Image (cartoon, rainbow, N blue to C red):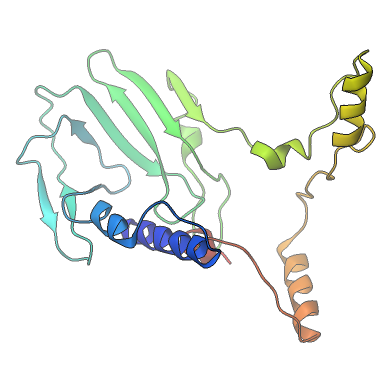
Length: 218
């Protein structure tokens, strides 16, 4: 997973550079971030207690990128926080985090991205087992977000101001969303058929995706 993150940043750097943009960082910066002593690797359901002691980890030299492999430590003396990663789906190595404050057992679940359904190469998320009983659940709402999401939104309520009405008509295509809602029922077979139609015409198919993660599902 660490190596995939490094490759993703390499790919992002190359894409921006080819477009004539300044990525804002160099490949040497990426190597420095993903270098020795940069990461503590955990397995799913492995709990680490913070703050770490000096003897609680050892170096894992089996990969090109040297990372710290955290040992399971049952000694909770002087520990303040327990952190446990669980399977989130969505991407290989993806996880959501359960943070527990040991002083009062307050539990916070941090789940920035997840996918509940089983996929070709990934089982579904186990978030439903932990999110319901947590003291706080931090996540992102489903559906289109950001600037793209605004194109799917229904128009706001009309106002009496003439200038505001003109803005609404221009932006919302005369009271309707600029784009129709995405069709959630489109199946995998339909996607494959569209691809094959293009290839049979000696055409090309471009599926924009990052260098790691979702590309494995494709």
